[in-house]
Image 1 (cartoon, rainbow, N blue to C red):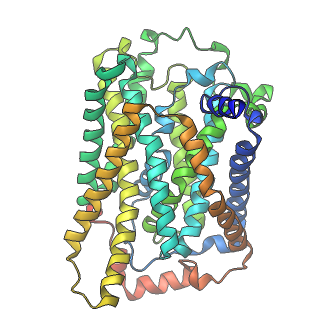
Image 2 (image 1 turned 135 degrees about the horizontal axis):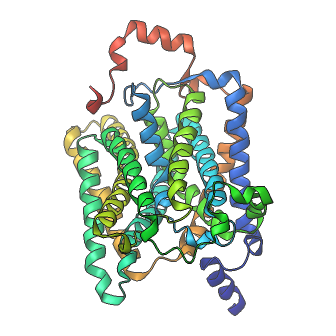
Image 3 (image 1 turned 120 degrees about the horizontal axis):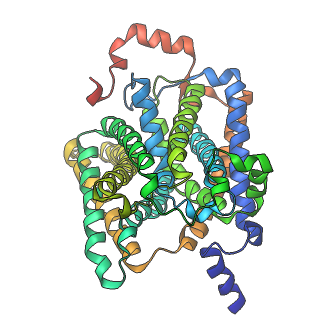
Length: 437
């Protein structure tokens, strides 16, 4: 038992090599590789041209930039912009680490999204979505708060008040965003802030202490010349820890893809989701290859505030998109239950408010507890195993989708001709989301 707990502690500290933990390594690497293969198959399949259409969900987001911004902000959470590159610099370099992380998380989330199109009304999928939100956002939001507060090096009881403030700001902004359906607008703002902050950080590189950075690995993908990326698949524990984190929130991200992708072909979802994250990663690495969003106060309070606001903004969109999927699920399920029971239905606005406040309040409280008591990585690494059976079904389904072996009438998609006919007969169906009108 002693050696077993020592092994768990070492796993939580990401000590040693990834191959020291063969079960975790094979599960998470296997999910990533299989999802990547199936999404590539769909891109080249004729069935990839099928158009997403869920009649009882949101209207089409007409702006391609807004759609890509939503996917990028939802998919990245805060792990991309909140990671500490110095932890990876002196092994393989962050270009290589986050290159695989970006491709990996995109494939997993899009595969989950394709499966969610066919299963979004199933109650068991809603339960899994709740687990994903609790576990996934218990990883990403604490990362944002911890990164923002890291430069102050707070210890003990002195950490409590700043943590409460940061979490409260995230929760309040997310509540406003959900209540007034501002996610499209928030996502656009996030991208602008991300670019501005990256430029600001890049122009202040000379004021940042980068003595801990291996200067031989700060150029884009420099390590790839020495075959380091392929070693990283097998050796770097940070990579598969990040991948396990992606698995935790990819369930609700997949459902969000199902809710916001009406009017886009499955191939478009893959294309725009992947391109948007690669775009963010490239901009990010122009900075992080030498500095990163470590929010060093050495670059002045203005730079720190700008970078911290960017972190908060990404945390808000993560919480907003997760809550929106749960609100949609709960409103539909509760509405069906009340209709079947013959009871007078609760007004939709009241129901939305109750679910929104309850969800965000619960998640905010959980994150406070985790941040105040310490957040072990082992929590994410082990709990995410609960999603492994789900991804077995996802991988099988997306493979069958690509080769034409499913009932497409139940896939949440329609043919291109059916979509064109739908638009001709009902042009109001493509009116855009509320803040797009």
